[in-house]
Image 1: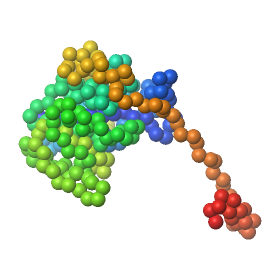
Image 2 (image 1 turned 90 degrees about the vertical axis):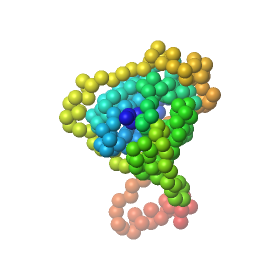
Image 3 (image 1 turned 90 degrees about the horizontal axis):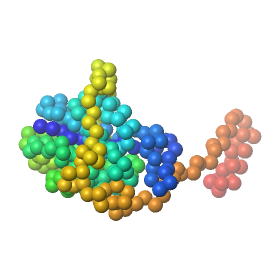
Image 4 (image 1 turned 120 degrees about the horizontal axis):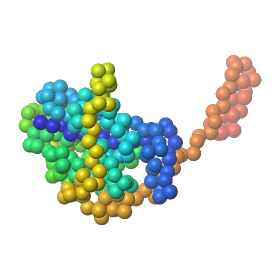
Length: 266
């Protein structure tokens, strides 16, 4: 049994967005973090490993610096990692990205008792489309917005989070589950595995490695093969500087009320 987790390295939203000439984000030049919902998916897979002794495999599509993130996940307890990285894949929208990741997962192989985990959505795009699209392209049943997961052997019982409640769904394996960050608290890296993670193998899937997979079509991957494009990426303008007033005297109070009155707040 395998638990295959699709993980994305995303820009650190507290930093500055670097943009290329074609309007896409220059991910290699930006501070990055592991997507929050994807960390919940990794923890769900590791908890399944704790219960069943299954193998946990992580697949990530991104530039070469994403290797550092994958090493951290190995230190958490992941068994194998695959980095899907090639210039031909650059600029892919959700449709093209899901095709490429689905091809990578298909190359790894999905057996009858396997589970594919994804985060609900990424903080950079917020589309929540890639996970469901991967499921469709692999022909897997899917449950989205998982807030609780119970393994039943040949099936899973999933508590699906809704805006006004929840839904309990039983789904047979193999299947794909997308996880919300409220599902769990991701574990810390193990000290011993931190020492060993840089000696553990990391497999690269470039275009040559995946080009013969059924889902890889040069006309439907990358920037030119994407049916949607980001018109413009930019950092939002900084907010106005804060005004600090010190003192507890009448003059300070009068100054504060004057500022609030000028802004029509009082």
